[in-house]
Length: 442
Image (cartoon, rainbow, N blue to C red; front, side, top):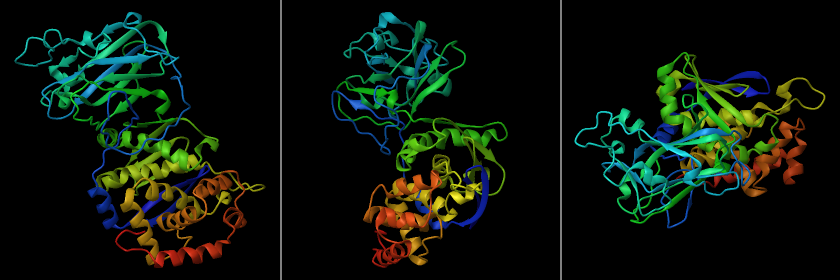
């Protein structure tokens, strides 16, 4: 099918028509994925985590920019089969990385039943929320409102709030499992901050977490150094239903994978770094595009028609923001920063060869094999770039991207980076494609 895409280069918008095969989309949708916005350290045993590798995006020892008087650890779901939620302890870490004693804050929580039947309190005797800050992993906090049959209202009341007398900066937090019933461990949670108790800022969010089956207490520490430089939000102004869908299913996976885009494209060299990215649903035809300024437009029809492509499409557009191309020296036209096929090929190389797994690599290479034109853009050009990176220099694409960002692109850059001309590289790539295994695309 033909999909109209808008592709960002500097401050202009370019429109091109991209042909996408439904078979490729179907293959992506069939893949079961669990994305986790987290990088934990296990102190007492091995952990089983599902999801993509998370690349550190900030310097070690990073402290969250703002200081707050209130922090909240909110448990959104337990591990599925449990009849409640439980954990043994939650810890906060100060600017030096030291654990903050419970005497430094006031603990607050919601003790309302919120319609919970069959019990007289939210926790059994001796297993209340106070246990979560006693520093003893031999005790636990159990909450009946966090079980598999809990209502949304009941789950929203499962939280611990830490109140400080004055604004406090943190470097991270951790939570510890109880020593029994792993099916009661949190599987989704948020870490929030506020200065007034009314307006809350989400500092971290985790979904799809699975701990091991070990019946022993384990600690999971989260450093703010591991949180992405970019925070993504969804604009619900015009299309709240689509925005809700994107928020619930796609925003966090996109945010979790954004540091990898930064790393692969040498994002630290971009002029526009850090800050907030807004995903804006639109009823225009197409899939997704960006016009710069931290905005990504996402088409409603595309979200409904191709849900398995949404994360990849948004990361593609985020890649254009990271590219941050500038005009070639002495020229005013931003399109002269590098050819369009290269711009699209670079961000698709990030997507298909580093984020879509074996199926993505196979699709891109098999598509290129049918019509091997290195300057065809998107997946085909991505295949060409990947061949060069694997053959000559694994940092080749980042270096090539930097020449475009600096306004220094020219055909001679290929020979300077690989020792081969563009024409020679094309012939080598075509030979490589002919020898591909059709079953694996490698």
